[in-house]
Image (cartoon, rainbow, N blue to C red):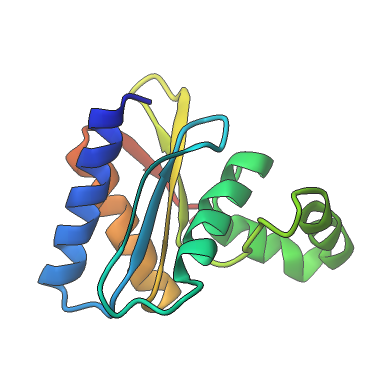
Length: 141
């Protein structure tokens, strides 16, 4: 993922959050390898919001499914998700707000993770950022 694309996603997600008066967010954009390409923590975001945002996106990349789907899977296969969390060094957060990013052909190009408001609002901001970059959000709905 190009840095310019990551910045577009981050900025649009941030703008959506402010327009909707969401609580202070941490926003992380990761490439398909799970490396952070862009990150912000808004003023007022609590200390570990960034870790949660990165964990949501990283988990989605690691398992190839959005963090909402990981949460659903955790209810059915708790041992599997716990094992994956262990394997990833605890970097897997199984709640909505970690959204996969795909291009028009369906190829995985990265993930966005947001934390700070409700998981549903975090996911809404993710999707706004992805759409602004002309890419496709995969939420796990």
